[in-house]
Image (cartoon, rainbow over all chains, first blue to last red; front, side, top):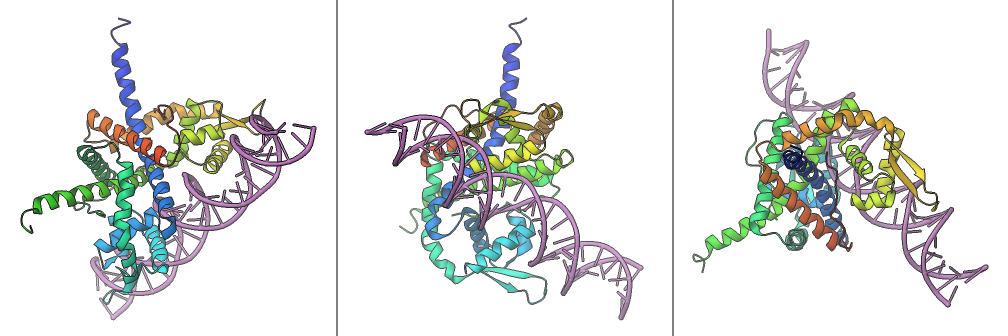
Amino acid sequence: MTQSEPSQARGRDRRVRIRADAMYRIHEVSRLISTYFDNAMAAHCITRAQWNAIMHVNQNPGATQTELADLMQMGRAGIGKMLDRLEQKSWIERRPDENDSRVRRVYPHKDADTLFAFMPEAARRLYDDFYAGMGDAEVEQLHDALQTMRRNARLALGKDEPGPANGPSA
Amino acid sequence: MTQSEPSQARGRDRRVRIRADAMYRIHEVSRLISTYFDNAMAAHCITRAQWNAIMHVNQNPGATQTELADLMQMGRAGIGKMLDRLEQKSWIERRPDENDSRVRRVYPHKDADTLFAFMPEAARRLYDDFYAGMGDAEVEQLHDALQTMRRNARLALGKDEPGPANGPSA
DNA sequence: GTGTTTTTGTATGCAAGGATACAAAAATAG
DNA sequence: CTATTTTTGTATCCTTGCATACAAAAACAC
């Protein structure tokens, strides 16, 4: 039986290896995207993280910082500092809530219009580079897998099942 | 024409949205994995990034820091600081090269054996949480998509086509 | 041989974001 | 109406990692 089990064992090893490897690659590819994006956009002084945040603000105008933190799955402190940077660049503005003086509601600033004039197309070009060689079906499978993992993470971290997790779409 | 194309237009929008959304989710899920991993391993004082680095050292004993940086797709400075932390915790050790006095070759420290006693299984449990609801085929598709994107990134960033990108397998 | 270029690792500064602790304000208990 | 609890945003510190600039050493001129 020296011959009967090794292929199963190899199959088991392979499964473990692929699962661990995919997990690591998410981290690696995420960094590579940021590096590439930040370099390409250096002339416009905008980073991937900042663009993501602006997109979320733009799609949820008037949201509170806590709501944005939940949408982007990050902590309030991190959001606060990010919004500080965006506010300083006049890409967003924070207005106090009328009824609740703790709350600062976040809106896109009109100076960000120049961003929206070129960023969507520029970002799409960068994205296309990363999806080179992948068909629509493969990208959609990737998308679905990541949505599943996001949902698993929210459950594991003890957050209730949220809505359909609307993310930025440009 | 206002009526003849809408389903195509919707299809185009959907395609753009999914591509952008998947790109964002990589970033988001990567953070969620780190957060979850770091919390779960807080008692053992090891982070996801540190575990990844140790795995690479363990699978490439005697590698130079530059070689490790290339394997992990990161800069030499970042690797250097990470190795500083791992060295301080006695998980790796750096030995000078005999022929090239610039080079410091990196080896796993035997004190890391305790890590290897429990980490692979613990990490695998965490990974399983994130893959909940996904079959082997889906994980493998995810893995392949990420490999493609890694390759695309290397090409776009001007690095030559490397070997089969052996990553950590536990 | 000496002079230039490349390579290796480090020091410094920054952005991103998690953990924690906090003050102010709101909600809730009693 | 007061006392406790919860919520919102901020301040502080830490890890991760990129960019840049650097010194030392090697490799390659010639």
